[in-house]
Image (tube, rainbow, N blue to C red; front, side):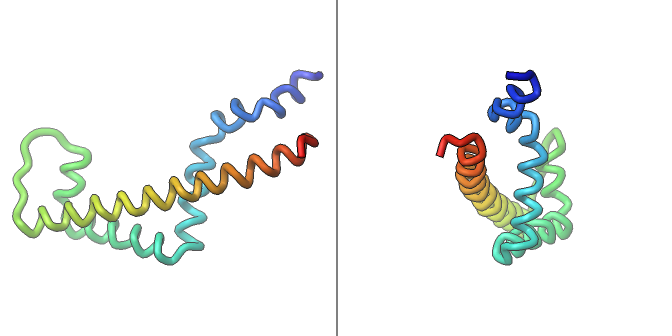
Length: 110
């Protein structure tokens, strides 16, 4: 078997090498095809823009004080992020199944 063919059949390495791109593609596809996912992402983005403290919490260092309104916005933001990440993981799971089936079919295993 040639080295290129071995590389092609080594699905684990191919997926590891391409995972960042696959992950990004899945998020992009979800945003454009799943209206509920897109609405969650938009709301999270709007909260982050309306409440700059969210960015400071996520990226900064040091002490931060929150108003009641900012705290509520941050709680809502984290809930939205959990929902979008669950949708992304679900899509990755299903994508893995379809890609695996296509791969097994291509190599003649099924």
